[in-house]
Amino acid sequence: MKINDALPLEYRTEENSNKIFGFWLFLGAEIVLFSTLFAVYLVLWNRTGSGPTGKDLFEINGVIWETVLLLTSSFTCGLGIHAMRLGLKKPMMIFFGITLLMGLGFLGIEITEFVNYVHEGATLQTSAFLSSLFVLLGTHGLHVTMGFLWGAGILIQIKRQGFTDETTNKSFIFSLYWHFLDVVWIFIFSFVYLKGLM
Image (cartoon, rainbow, N blue to C red):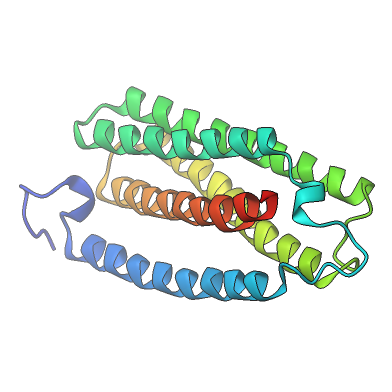
């Protein structure tokens, strides 16, 4: 059932509005998940045993690049949604494609970081600090990976079907998810990496 043609396309049916509301509830559960992981990390961050500390492991250059890639991808994702609302299919797909490529770049740097940590003897079993670190970063990285796959699927649908009530709704919900991951990363950057480098 149509609601109001003056609304953005992703909100124009009652079903779409309900899906967006339901996704906000899902993000509330995600906030609880990440809050729990942060709480565990903050309790265990100085429980390093004989293993390396954050100061020993963290390299600010990689973290800065991860931050730039992820935050810029949030901006291009927003540009994609703006283009979608204007009915511009090709620019929307380009902006979403750039978003996903930056997400891949982020994942590449993070995986390289993890490999370097393991080569330095930092594993899940080394200390409570490293266990909580790997679980927190790994959970976020898994979410980015799932977001990449989801976004790629949406791009395929838009290429085939164009802008419909369904594809615009999925695109908007994806953008909420992607922005959420960026907010989580700001907390990781601040409370994991900056705190660990001090």
